[in-house]
Image 1 (spheres, one colour):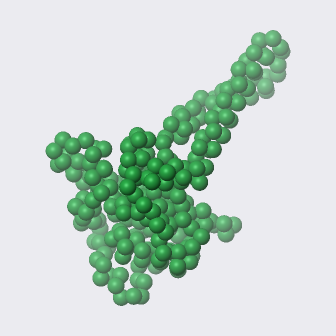
Image 2 (cartoon, one colour):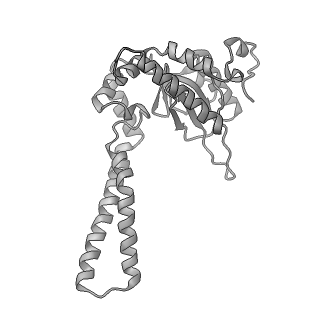
Image 3 (cartoon, rainbow, N blue to C red):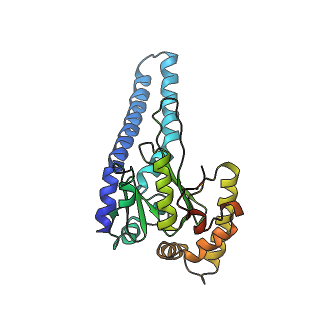
Length: 264
């Protein structure tokens, strides 16, 4: 079930197609360079054509590593974790996970967006977030002069790493408020906005606490630590919340008056 779930998401996100297109374009440019060099040996060409060939060669060199990293990454629908685990290990993480649509979000204006959850994972627009490891998660305000802006869902893990998932559509204030309610009441994750220097400082604090936590696990490998945190990160998450600025350390009671007093 788990393997089919994430494979389905990979194809729905068109990652295999994108990889094939990138490889094809890069190889085509390589062939252009080879053909251009051969042509230069047997023909007189203008200086402009030579410079064009040089620029194409520079482009090929500069894009080699980024394209290679993109192509080699397994399951791009699982950001952050696809850099920590192998393909087989990622499939194992999802082996016993069964996903169902989040009725609360579907019933509150987000019925056209992919929102689903399993015991340990939140699926957002066919990408996955660890429910246990999130400390902060919110649907961010966006603005565009063209009016075609889309809403990103932003999350920060106990490791200090951040993930951003584009929903492909724009959520209004009501929808973002309902998403915040779900995140807070159902996941016990703070739906707060953190930007700029505050975000970097908070990320550094979480990273330090995470590294300390790993050292305290008696020589356990980092992969094993993360696997355990995916199952249960209550202790480390509590430590991270305690280390946050007081204005972010809201208790459940702060959101219990029914008036949706979050951060607007």
